[in-house]
Image (cartoon, rainbow, N blue to C red; front, side, top):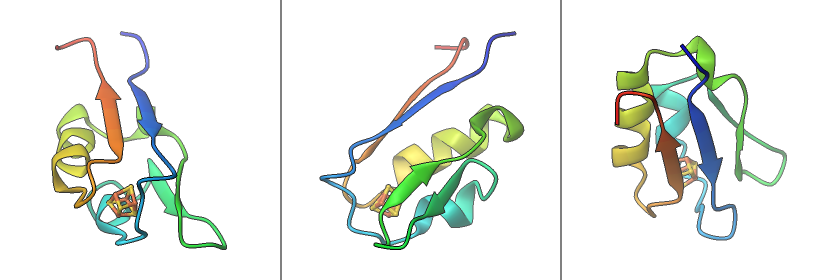
Length: 67
Ligand code: SF4
């Protein structure tokens, strides 16, 4: 199984931190409170999907094999 791909539109991110709550091993906030990608393969795909859908600014794009 290949790694899920996760991209963040850092210009759109408003630093709400929902993604970190949903998938703490896949996301973190940097010093400017903008999201960065850590290790998306460490989270189940459902958690990545929840983060994608829970982002208030639609800044997360997840691609998994199950699509
Ligand atoms: S949920 Fe969206 S807006 Fe909030 S920190 Fe994550 S990427 Fe940024």
